[in-house]
Image (cartoon, rainbow, N blue to C red):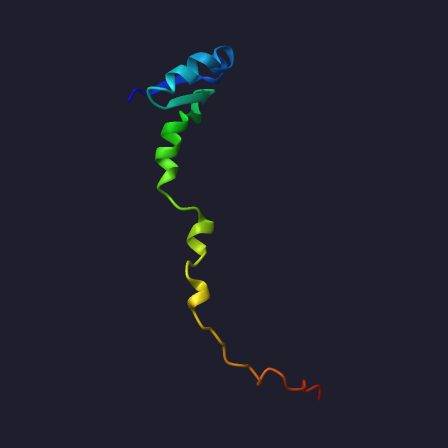
Length: 84
């Protein structure tokens, strides 16, 4: 894996060069000397994110229809307010 670093000016001037470089590893794009962005090939991106579940996947519960859930009624909350 080759890591390439280019300035944002170089990136804007030659996007094709950056895209070619992303085929062999990440391309760090700097802005005023500080790393601001990373360009990855789609294959590398999918390797990084493909194995992780999204928050939506983590919050959904498979087989939820098989669970019987009947919460107890809260009758104590239904009393008149004491305004005296």
